[in-house]
View 1 (cartoon, rainbow, N blue to C red):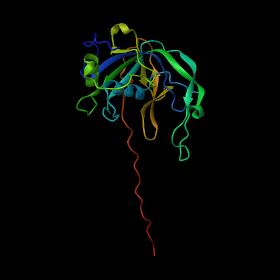
View 2: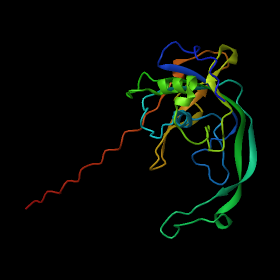
View 3: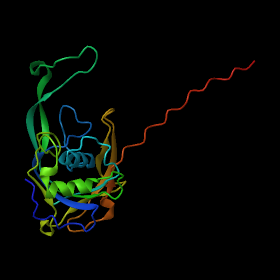
View 4: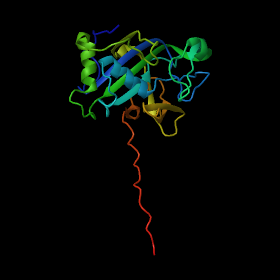
Length: 240
């Protein structure tokens, strides 16, 4: 469900949009979780960025680099539940190629999930280089969703975690607890995940108190890390 009744509300800047996202059930598996799939308690910026790209039908992760996101909770941190579900486990290598039948490569594992997650998101596209910014495309998705060409369900987290609704934020949403960037914070969340190496870029955060108001420390820029420079090979000098 996409509510378009509040299209004229929200931040004043044309490059900035505030959103309210409700997800009844989701999970953000930790990067190093294996058999027991723990979840991050808060939506990672990398996940929210992917959610926005999916919403507007963009498949290239590089298109809107430079956009800044601010993430908060419109309620207390959601409770963590534990479920038992079937998970597939694949072995990769030259000896393990081809099909993977469920009878041989699936087993039950525990997984943590979050319920009744209410997320507040602000995005600022002033730092983008794209001709049509992500804020512009999100505004179109809110006002004229028929103009958006996309496929699949709209999920926050894993593919099964479909969202219940997206709309612009309102003053009646109540106090928001924003995630503030803090080098000494105890909340570590991925900001960017490299699809080729599966390595992530992480930032540390602190959860602000409810009703503290918006803080500029909540902004985090989505940017791909610079490729490591490869030193040139030099020939050893021969001395006679």
